[in-house]
Image (cartoon, rainbow, N blue to C red; front, side):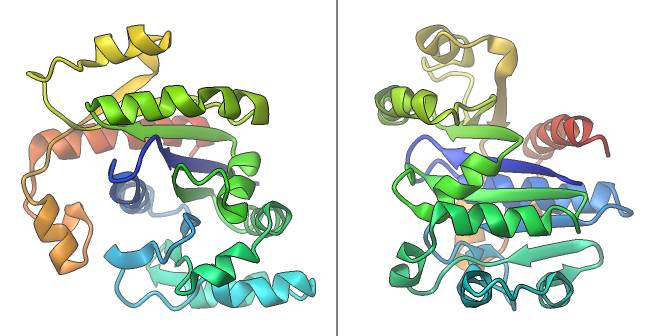
Length: 245
């Protein structure tokens, strides 16, 4: 049975989707014998950086509701490259509203038996989204992404009590687009949130962020920037060790 690893954003535009995709793609490349699934469960399409995705939670939902889900069919449709599988989100926000937490939990209960690791992008502040909440309930480990902005830190502080009450408190934290000269250092954020500094990862700023959005590709397909790749590799190593790959 695989591990379910969920990436969730403290606030919108923290780069949660790019982080989750870069980690999943790197893991698939570094562990060619492992089946790696990337699923977008943030209440939107999610797969903007994966052109040509053929499977989505929208298409799976009706079969889940009737308990007619066929894992082998999902594997066939979601195969993206080699050992890397992708399930897109929703093209219709109204469809996502019909996706209850129980359906999301059922989907992951089925899929985790067919992959070595399931990496989920559950969006940001989506605790009101059934599918996002279901993936958080199913998570073996949760990584919270944030940026060095007061709005992102305060947003997590605002929702922290809810995370704790729902028992989906993040296990690790990622400060994305990291700048050492920013006064919101990892030390400052860890002290302010009363979270051990060792539970924080930082991901260096990538100069091609806007280009990746325009080109609809992950940052791994843009200019190779050593600091960014090093930081992604550190997260991949952490996930891989936890998933016992």
